[in-house]
Length: 305
Ligand code: FDA
Image 1 (cartoon, rainbow, N blue to C red):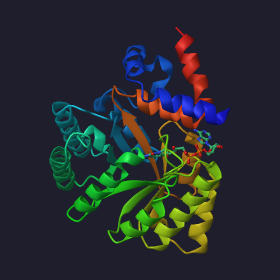
Image 2: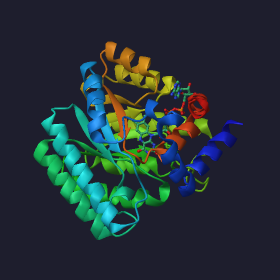
Image 3: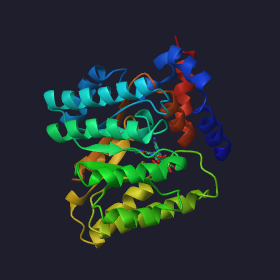
Image 4: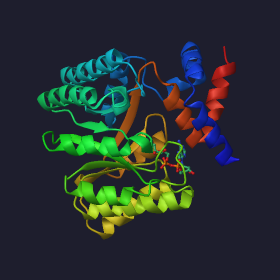
């Protein structure tokens, strides 16, 4: 049943018709509980509030799979003005972005040009940028670009997904780049040819990747709401004398709020991933696929006045 509903929502996450309809229904689906507003300006008070609680933030302008050059350039502009606003408002936040929003599927030149402009601004204003990881057909290109840019821009991170068979090798290679990695289980629908399909194997692999990247001496973000993963990390860092400034926990905005605060209380660094923008549909559907309990507030939102 769980696998069925996961597949159902992952399938819906790719529907452009439903995407258009969802924009009309707006936050009534409950998206406002996990999205920080439709514009960066709307997200600012929320970031300030999270910061005042001691939480670090990474913001993400929602939207992916852009297939027009002008839109990809607009997305890059949005990233640059977000970086400037982060600086102007002295916000404690990083920027997360998806390469398919910047032209990855259009041309190498375009995504390269857009990323260069964004990373120049990030360097000027000292803002850390993390490249989110999308589906496996884009992993190779994403990591190639990451390695290329990491040489010139140190404030750059990316994401590795433990469901992919290749990830162990990727983490090993990325160690040569002293990579800032966010380690996750993975949110896309992948075939058994490239990814573990059993949850227990995905979980085990995430533990292996966390251990490997930390022992290789690299800064590691453990991005999971899974208590078992968090307990594993706490135990591992203690046994291996890994200092608290070599890792952080990351969670999505609106998920496990109390756990975020508990970790803070225990002295751990916690970062909240806060998406904003009008294109919340695909993000929202992937979250439903991960945790069908989220359906409750979506259905409630649909039928409330
Ligand atoms: P998982 O979904 O495996 O759940 C394990 C257990 O945790 C559940 O059984 C339940 O007990 C508990 N749990 C989980 N969510 C809960 C909730 N909301 N409330 C209460 N209990 C809950 N993916 C990707 O492919 N590319 C990316 O770039 C990113 N980026 C990213 C950033 C950040 C900050 C996070 C937290 C996640 C991502 N992801 C991602 C998504 C990631 O790949 C994964 O799909 C989700 O985090 C879900 O997996 P979990 O490890 O959180 O737990």
